[in-house]
Length: 186
Picture 1 (cartoon, rainbow, N blue to C red):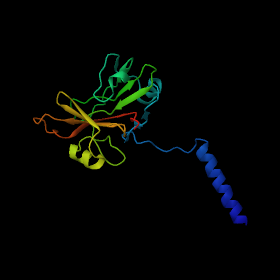
Picture 2: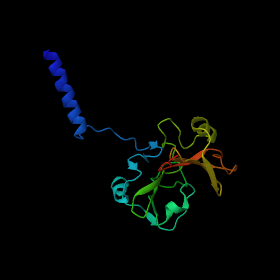
Picture 3: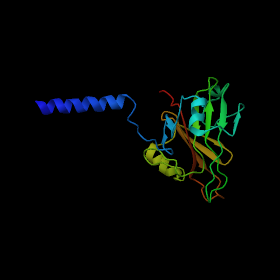
Picture 4: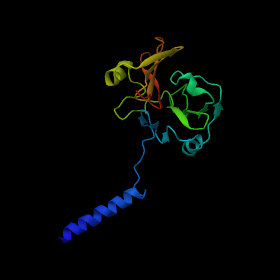
């Protein structure tokens, strides 16, 4: 009887710690969660909150287009661009990017590219072959192209993969970018 009371007390203590916010689960800064976020940056957070995580963006533009988001979602939107951290042996890298709607809420997040450290919980990453994405997720709900890039968009999941299509490049047919957005409701 006494041991049951001790166990109950421990359970109450642990539940109290978890609910009080003192229990902290570390975040993988390279984890891409479809329909939710990348690292500590989450869809729906404000740009002010993102700046607390990433620092000040290098630039912002209010005139933008998106190969992923529908045109009507971009009315009044702004893209914020952070500079890419220098990495030995990596050239032409783009930095972290986030699109915020007219209210300042993030509606799309793009991982720095090319950076193979960014990965989904099930292991899809920049540098994977397009076929690996298709085998894991099935066919995309839609695709678009812009220049030498094709976008495989999974609207219900809230994730898009950018595929290099120029066969002159060594990464042709491979994922060279990933973005997350609010999933479409079916």
